[in-house]
Length: 104
Image (cartoon, rainbow, N blue to C red; front, side, top):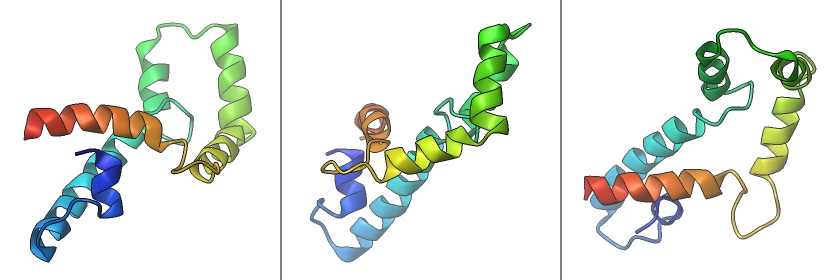
């Protein structure tokens, strides 16, 4: 059972179980997605705060991805990438499978 399978409704159970699994899976997916270190998301704030003195490379990364809003463009492009499912679901599905194995 994978997180993307739960979100797509591929887990066949009663409608009540599917509804609860859908809510739990979507909350887990949103939580894992927020940890991706791209500036509109919370993971960038964690990455920025973890450094004592961000170097020139990190300053340039922040300028382009946060101030010039390239991070939003990257997120939108990764959300609509024409694969079998969005590109952002790869890391979420990978980590979500680990969490689901620990949960179940």
